[in-house]
View 1 (cartoon, rainbow, N blue to C red):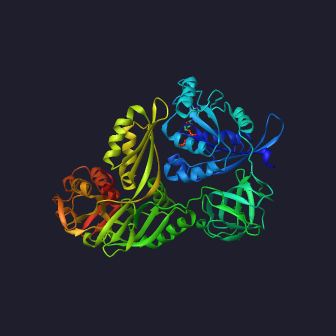
View 2: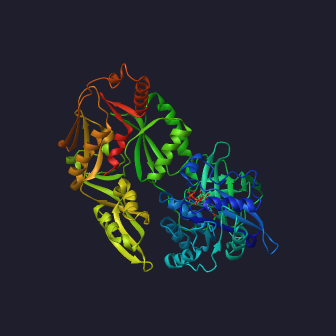
View 3: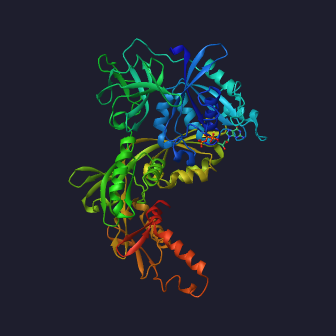
Length: 597
Ligand code: GTP
């Protein structure tokens, strides 16, 4: 269809307010998926998404809808990920739309996590249609929630749609509103091609599958295209859309959303936010907003069983092809053996990749605590980035260490401002602003070391605000700080995989705390285990785990055999995630205990 018959929109919602259920109803009501085909939450394809209940990979579907005006429309529903790690991807997905459905649970009201996405939508000038969902619930209070949308977000909610995605109420009205209230896409159909990449993934047969929003011009199979950020050129093999399976088309025109393939070997060449243009008639300027993504959290991944190293290598290579934000390089640890230092956008991204490695590739892994990169200036003036605390040079060779800083924006109800400001101070934050968005809602801006966010900021923020604060952040550069490496020694042997970089003032406290935690998570062994924390060779804390005296099962002899078996089984299960470090068995929790403060 031509642009006037196209609508491009997203659904934005707080977790559990019903985004996936509503998407299911839209697919059904437009006959895109029949009720028989409909598994609940059709758009959440990956297992992990299903279990975690979040959307990781944007899935974009075309709905064909005959509106009340008698015309047939193509409605492109663009799914967006819902976590701050992926906020750049969200912003690009929204940049591909003209409108968004804002789904709010009519019994819960406006909640924190929706706000960041609403602001991204407003930044992209989207038409926002409020939908009050779950009106079937007896506790639904649409009037109150309508007022909240007006007060907190500042949107006119008088025309908000009442819906129950569960029972299918309001679906038709929502589809009509998409057609009537969201403007058709603009753009110049005759101009040189400009298409925004808002998602891509790797397919072993087609190469990269790229989701694009064509802004100007058109794309056809056989066209030669150029990626504007890299200058790489390709010949288009297929274009089409998902409905929900792939449907080939002859052309994607201005205003349209769909996929293309072009025998592209890796998704590294199809970066989200980049502009595709024509190689023969290139556009003079790319679309605004491109920003290459950079890994900002690193951890070591090691096979529990070193025989799985080759399998792990193959698995990380595969994931690398599929995820431009993921990076890896081989790493050797004296404690853990051969593994990889991997880079991620943030903590959630890290957890997702670890989970995929274990599930899809059936690997059993030990991961070291996540750390941010540091920029080290040596005494001789050379500057290096280190991605692993163990690589920190000795203090006498260092002139300066700089750490990444973020500007953090925190939205919260005013009653939690005091508690959250105290937390930000403790996290070495500097306040950069405080603004009342409404009489009850505050926007706090802080400049803060990213390291503190990686540690436990998010959990602490949630508990300081009873879950009502939302966090969004942007990197603002590197800043020098008084940082030292804290080493952990087990039976006098330094364990490189347990080293952390900490602020000098906190080193003593962190060292004691960490040694205490390790004492609690490392099981008793046949001989004494001594745990020491040290800074620059000076021991600042010491803990001791007394040896086991007897066989743990000895006391069961002659007694209850099932109890003995249970005990052994429990020991065996505990063993799975153990790593022999020198003469001591260290469990996975030990490597993560550095994260808890
Ligand atoms: P995430 O994917 O975790 O962000 O959640 P979501 O916003 O996609 O919510 P989802 O569609 O998974 O719905 C969350 C829960 O609310 C599910 O248990 C749904 O069955 C339920 N739910 C969704 N819509 C309605 C509704 O209209 N009424 C009632 N009573 N329950 C609903």
